[in-house]
Length: 418
Ligand code: HGY
Ligand code: MN
Ligand code: MN
Ligand code: MN
Image 1 (tube, protein in one colour):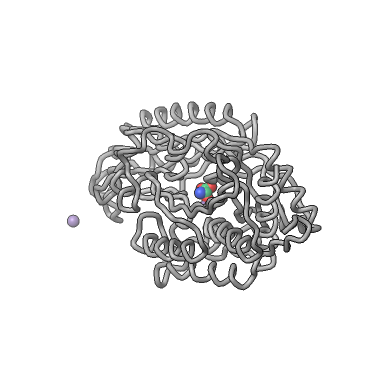
Image 2: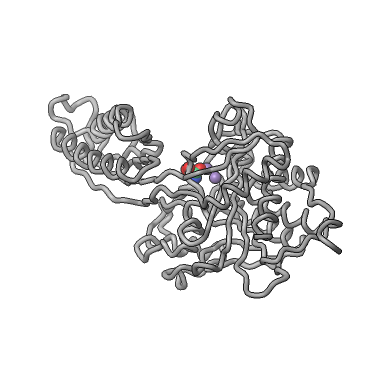
């Protein structure tokens, strides 16, 4: 068959919608949509996903980092793989699209190419990266960090509240922590990676555009902070004699917010979204508080500068209040830029389908930020309703999804031809 006679590769809307719906059903009853990494539901969802991959003609395996990979052979020997994927885990009480869309759309690319009899020269991989969201072990993007060789022995020893280590968690998901210290994928092994994701913001919706061509992904630093005070009777302890860990933490959190609002180098965001109070009783002065400070910026320097400032602020407030403190960096990823050839391939694919697109940076973290450390990488964003994400209201219409998935398959085919 000559190239001119090849049928176009078209996304199958019904199959894509049905698979997205099926994956969303692997969630906690009464808490839509929750499928946290390492949970029984996550394992069950991946079992289903593996079956879908096999039924679509992909060879499946789980790598040492616990990534579920479906692979199609290419027609030429010796070429690195083209790859697409995202993550099947969700945040607690999250949405149906963050992560799931990128995995299911990548699988649809494989299925659509098969329907059309289109074979790539390169091998093609559909990847469900392990544990992209922060989880009970604290660290995010476990699978993509493993591929890039970013996991240390110290990371593998991170403990969850149930006493298990991250290494054990990876093993539970089918990985092999003993093989994780070197990068799993040498440079060249993946010739190009494209992840599709909902935007998680309001830019595309506001400008009525179909596609965001991601230019860069923010850097993220997460710091675990433990504040120690003294638990005392709330009625019998005068205000002047207290060492209230929660009051200290509150002063710190208010200072983090105020500083991020006036940051003068670049837009920077700081969030404390996780906080534990001990013993958490209404008539006990809080004796201990643990929280995670997350800081994000598009450039490395403001991140470093803010981090240094935050460490100093924690010390000052703790000393003023007679509290002890301990800080520990859980994870740090630097801002990364996306490959310019891949950005171009995505915008060309969007133009060819008469889609409206814009170039834009990502304020959310993604597996692509870690894959970019060892392979040319790019991302496609699609609009989502009211910019909502990390909440049950998260929504993109099937039309928006199909437009994005069509741009994805066209991008992969264009990269294959280069
Ligand atoms: O936290 C993030 O930015 C991503 O959703 N994991
Ligand atoms: Mn997310
Ligand atoms: Mn995501
Ligand atoms: Mn009492």
